[in-house]
Amino acid sequence: SSYGVKGLLIDEKNIYLSVSNEIEDECYNITILKSPLNFDKLNFKIRYQTKECIKKANSYGAFQPIQSGGVMVNYDDRELILALGEFRFRDKAQNDLSDFGKILKINKINGTSKILSKGHRNVQGLFFNKNENIILSTEHGPMGGDEININKDLSVAKNYGWPISSYGEHY
Figure (cartoon, one colour):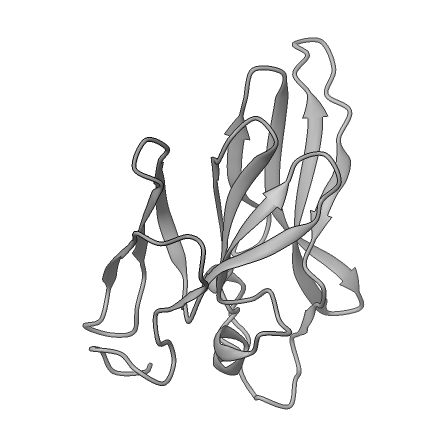
């Protein structure tokens, strides 16, 4: 399925799942679910949801749930990093009011978020080097345009250009 679980993260005490979630009729977002790590029963609660959902039928004219990202890595004890695709609603990646097409830092306690970078199509690989404070991400770009992105300055939201700048061809 193009829907369902998009990412998994386990820290010392909790398990986090990022899932595509139908929050309105035919309108999807990415939601992070959190449960205490328990080998008898998992009790998931919503920890974070994107600010908006993307409708299958939308004004942009495109929708692709497989292009939703969802990979997560630990940032520290209080925060995690989440990469979100843009569901093929390309303009969302440059819109600062949208979470889609972004890499976000999410507070594990209260679910607040901060944009670390934007202009992403569909990040699938994510690594955080805590000692150097660097994020490496691999991204399914357009045809002929896959990317490896290196973010060395997390104090300012960096723009990786999608969809206005790319080495590949739009599908």
